[in-house]
Length: 257
Image 1 (cartoon, one colour):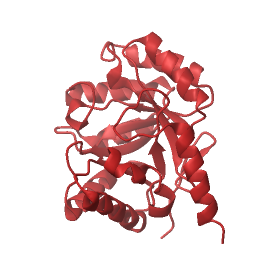
Image 2 (cartoon, one colour):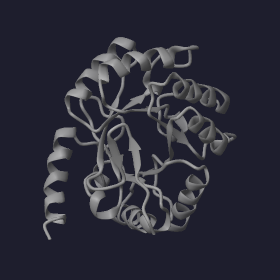
Image 3 (cartoon, one colour):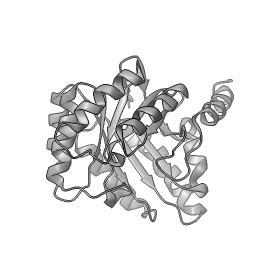
Image 4 (cartoon, helix red, strand yellow):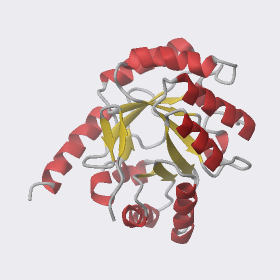
């Protein structure tokens, strides 16, 4: 199988060391732009704006307006736009209609390079949304998050199949482990998917128990890892500087021969 890589500006995702993504949080415009400066200073490969943390995000035009300012602050770093719903661990609930409108506004703004789409949101036509976002020359991460448990292996396979059917460019799965076997199951499905699908995959087992999965992507097949620069967006994130150091050391050993 020929593996697919994704190109965003000058960044290639899906080959070599996992790329480092730093989420940007904040309730106000001032907080978000200040966090963007800190995140950019950590020298990640891309930034994620967690828009669900912004108090005014559902106001018409708010997403596009702040994306423009965020883009200027971020410089040349690609931007991933994410509204994480409360159902998948985010800051607030949102209807499928609001979710669709918001993501299309972000895509049409021209300042988001990637959009995270919760592909299994109830009553959301994720495939149609993905197709429309692609029409705005924007790429899509199809995602699914389990903040309270890790499903059985067969269910994880079914989740990946569902994500792939949306036509997204990258497939993402995040789970919460209850024991070490849950962590091993996440790593196992990750290495399985790198041959089962040509699309790059992103996986993580959250919290302290799953911390190793945020560092071992090059070994098991996850192409992206999320790291913090100040406020973390999910449990178990390492500071970006630590992630870069550890991944570089592992990469040197992996490629030594």
